[in-house]
Length: 336
Image 1 (cartoon, helix red, strand yellow):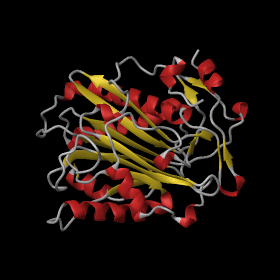
Image 2 (cartoon, one colour):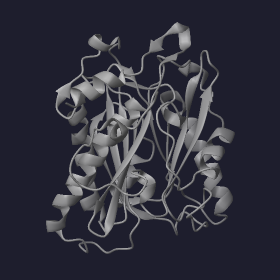
Image 3 (cartoon, one colour):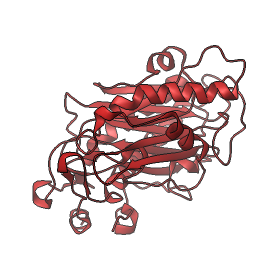
């Protein structure tokens, strides 16, 4: 039965979590999913991360224009074999001006177009928008060439986003993904840092050998299969970090993939997007305080990645291909 890793007695790191142990512990951040699962050839979807000020979801948003919602942000590229729409403007300006959406590789462009439509409806004055949409390839379990995502799927993920504990595992953009030889999907976690919070959400779909608190769990031993490529990591914080500091945070999130056994394959697109919800000026957060922020980011990313596996179930999909859930008894055994 899918279970969060803490329920298995596995506790990555030493910092305390937020109340939900999720990215939605960062005040105002919402998450929504649309899942497409026909029980046969389609296993895909959309996941929306909606920061405060972007007018979506059921709680915590101010509504209104993208300009009002612009937040400091940065992107780290572990390996650039991916289609991260909107990344160059975030790099150039250090600002996020739309929600962050995740989906399957060949649907990323339709999702970006739908996100622009959704935002234009909410801001009649907008003449330029930079949609940020990431992806991983779910083509092993889903008929990726059909590109089944429509605007209504995107709108539903945005409009239904909430501040509750997000669903994890085989949902939204994680419906058809796999990681470290096993079925994976969406995972989330958070850490408290002083009077602030760092929250992480991941879309796991990368190769390597699953490692739990330093102990490898070989896929062959647990009827898994190799494969999976790419990982999207979203880091949110209410600490007053500027774009440069957020870039340093985003890089630590990519580093944390190594803790769970990523092999950082050359065909993998590994990206982290970090943003702050705090009103701040450049340099307002002391550099000396970043040590604990880095620790929080790496711990939360590690736990989110593990949750993305332990919360997933076995799926048989396109052409009869199967990705098996990681056996939880082996995960517990590896953790000692």
